Structure formats: structure tokens, C-alpha cells
Image (cartoon, rainbow, N blue to C red; front, top):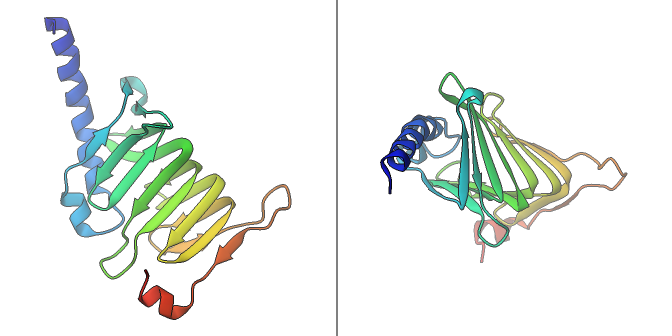
Amino acid sequence: MTTRQRLVLVKLLCALMPVLLLLASRSFALPEDAEQPILGTYDNSLLLLDEGKQVFYGTTDSPAELNQGTLKISGEEISMERSDGVVKKITVTGSPARYQQQPAVDQAIVVAEGLTIILDYDAQHLSIDDKARFSQANDLWSGCHIDYYLESRQLSTPRCDNGEQARFILSPRNEQANPQ
């Protein structure tokens, strides 16, 4: 590795650390998640310093991933936007893009999938688009678009623009208490 390559690598790592540490401090789930290290894997990345944006690239077979405690995000492209050193938004695209996190110790893991997922930290909002699916325990919602408000834990699944209705499956109470 040349001196120039080392310098570029050091600059990249210095630029990445604040973003990853800020991501850790803005978790919407278990308090322990924010105390966990962030682990990431990707095939390639792009850092746009002037725009406050980082992009991690993967493939359908080997998606880019970010993990922190129970938070797991994966897709063919993961884009993080920040302003004044604070992570504002994470956009994930893929076939599928995937988000999962445990909201509380006594609650099942939330799993969201779609072709595009946008996690907006300021609005505390998860937007799932195109082939959208949201599940927790044995319950499932699907449609063209799903909005999930993280703090209030409210879910909205409107009718598709093409007129197709959204769908849901709610499991009987005894199946939720004892999932198999």
C-alpha cells in the first residue's frame, strides 16, 4: 500500500467514525443497541464530504449491511445523510431492501422489506416502498407503501395508486404468545 493510499484510507476512516458513532446514539429501539459497535460490510463505498453523504454498495447476492445490536439494515445500496455531524436519514434500496430491529425487550423483532426503505431520524419515520412488507411476531402487513412511525409505533398502509388494496394477516392470540 502506497503512502498516498494510506492517507486516503486514514481520511476515509476519520470521516466515517463520527457518522457511525452518531448513528449509534440515535437508535429507536433497545437502549443497549446504541452501546454496541456498528459493524458494516460492503463491496464498495463513496464518501461525498461536501454533501454530508456516504453510500455503501453491495449486490443482490451480497448486499451491503450495517448492524448495531438488534438493528440490521441491508440492501444493494445504503446511503447515509448527515448535517452538522448528525445522521438525518438512511435510504436503502435493493431486491429487497431490509430493516429489522427489536423495539423493546418484551416485543418481537420488527422486520420491514421493500425495494426502497427510508429511515428518517428527525421524523422518527420508516417509509417502505414498492413490494412493501412489515411484520412483527406472526402478524404481517403488505402493500405498495407502508409508513411506520417509530416513536408512536403507528403503522399506515394505504391503498396503492393502481387501486390495489393493502393486505394484512393477524395471527390468533395464542400463536403470538407461543410463536413456533
